[in-house]
Image 1 (cartoon, each protein chain N blue to C red):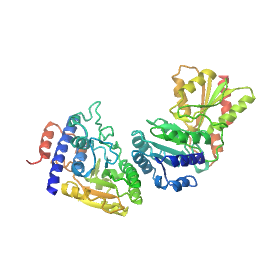
Image 2: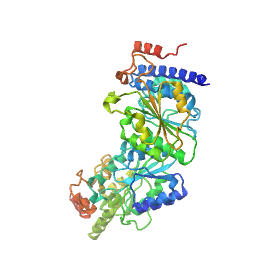
Image 3: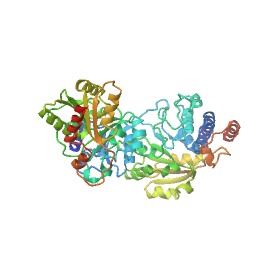
Image 4: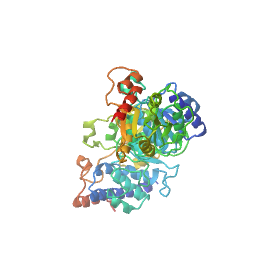
Length: 274
Length: 305
């Protein structure tokens, strides 16, 4: 059973990585490294975890996903297109004049719950959505993907205090912990370690996993909440630029886009072995 | 005004279960009644305005009409980007309520003085910006914002403001309210300075000068027609507000400047000078020239020009 579910997620991840690489290549856009680090997280969410209906994006009881690290837009749009929210052809228009696909995640794109791009906004909004569902005993869950650098923003910690106070066990945070923020290594800018202890101290139920191991992601995401009455946090250890050999763990790919030769090499890297 | 607000909100919430109230750990002796009556729709989010505003956006995105409540700049400036990005950009039904508009928290000092809030809020996309002139306008505007689509800012005084309207006015968002008709000039007021404008008008009448008084609680949308009509009919406009540059005076100037009319115009507003000593609302407001005599002096100078 498990291996059957891993295959689609792996294929999905390979496809959205390839889309994302082409998108930043065509549009000369930044943030490919941050996009690749959450490709596997999004793939597991969209291939099995999220209860959503791309044919009815406003279905009231859908699970909500907020990608608070809005600069990872290419991989989010790629995932939404592959999941069927809009034609895959739209992706080629990313950041072109007049395209719906703006450079940071936009709610004008079908399937996107909220626009992000300024960091530290997603989790408070997620708390509001989770609170509404919780107080009205509705079944849907709220997932929020945060970057590690984003945790420098104080607004997150206001929300981190709030969620356990109100027993929001329908709220799940996934930290894309790739250890590199915009201008340096996380440990050199504002060290977040010990990460799980921080969340535990705030009365969240935490789990550390390998954020590129599809089995671990599926296992973790399928058993939320980890504890009744507590919000859950998955600390996903990831690699910036994951999947493209020359982009992995490299700060410059927060900014740089691949040229034609680099794109070709990168696409080979992310292809699944046949 | 805050009493009129909470009584009205309680009344509305009784019949409309979409209405929620969030407070940022402030509102002692004001918001408790809502919390007791509607505990499922009330949250004290703690001293955390950014989170409060984000939560409000999340609730509103789930179909609620959400009031956020705090003092002066706290629900406005501390969380301005949440208001801009999360609330305004998504055009959500969040109503931001600030008590202590202007210098109502006089002795408390500059941290508690709302002198720039209207300027900031009225330029945001989709935002309806309201500063009622008395408790009657407060009640009617609190009712009016319920079904107003998109975000609203409701800037209130504190407690004990006098009732200015002797009859129940026709209050509509985006419309000025006429309290007196005259032909020698027009006084336009936003917020709690309405009483000053009415007193000045009474003094003018005693010396044979008749002025129109317009209460302009709605800064955005703005009643441009009322401003242009007043300019054409009376030739002179004085604005008065308990706020600094960028509020009513600036908004009226924007309308007049592009009107082609040659209107004599005197905007009275706070200088961008934070308080350096303790003072009552009256004392501090006087130091900025927002007084009856300030209005009279402005009218005399327009008459001479």
